[in-house]
Length: 73
Image 1 (cartoon, helix red, strand yellow):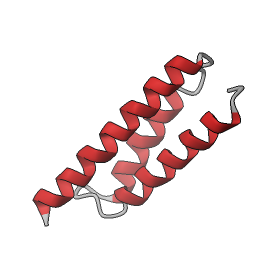
Image 2 (cartoon, helix red, strand yellow):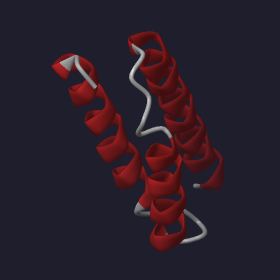
Image 3 (cartoon, one colour):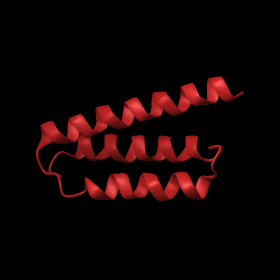
Image 4 (tube, one colour):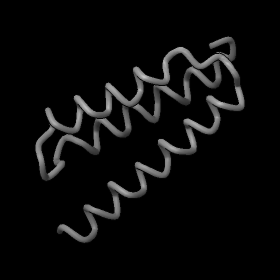
């Protein structure tokens, strides 16, 4: 990943998702394992456009998890 700003965004969204997963209904370990696999599977992407699409996808997942929380509690 050549662009440090994109790297920062990826790390930031990963940390945000990990934080949301702490109270995930199926457990943190379940959430963390799946999140790690999802990010690791995309680790080889070099194209900035593809990285941006991945960040957008992660933002969507974040919103879905937040919505799950809104419904659950």
